[in-house]
Length: 303
Image (cartoon, rainbow, N blue to C red; front, side, top):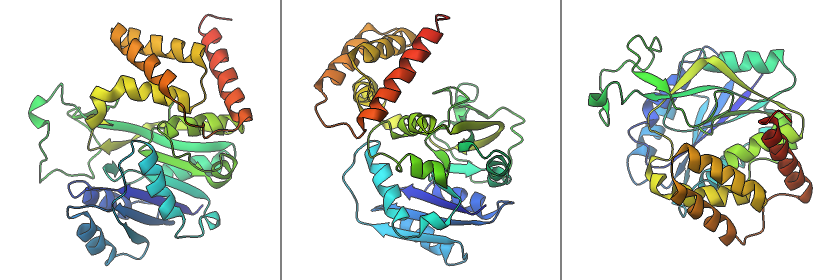
């Protein structure tokens, strides 16, 4: 199968080199990689251009800096990359982050799943981050002699980034079968796009697969800059994926209980109620998502 890899990047001078080097060294090489440089003000553009001058299947698209919009911005940047190629001539469309380091056999194993399972719609490994709790001295430090190709993890320096189930394909490492991507009508430019795509893939009867023994190194914790805005963004996310108020309240209560914060529940619901924009979903898609959420809710009670 032929892969199209698109990497949105903004001010990634500290991370982009190991990311691209890890892709260059893949055992599976039937891919084209496009780095979409979204108006970086650091050395990202120079680093990428120096790199692609020595390779044939890596390209760069330089954009002027766009307005910051969590969630929506990265999809718009990704779509700019899609527009530069005939993406329908590829079998698999990948949206990868610029701060990811891949094991040498990563693409090979993803390709094997797509080849062996015709119902596989979205596939990935797992996302690991540095084990700051066990090794606090490595926080915010980068060892210049670190071997990025070493995934033995003998000292447990890398641990699962526990933001969701190990069965959930995370936003930094999305790989879509082209037909699934078409059925979903691409990625939606909203906060929560990386959960919405899972729901839309399920609506079209595609399977979501994570390869449990395959992992990547994530050089920065997800959304580390927006931790304080989590509850506010959660309300916006619940609205964007089509939940109604009862479902939003149930989901907000679960998150608040998990985080031991009644305040979070109030902020989240208040944010949900403030949303007035037209949802980027059809009535059919909204109904499917709501029905699916209710089924999952009642399943937890054995109903």
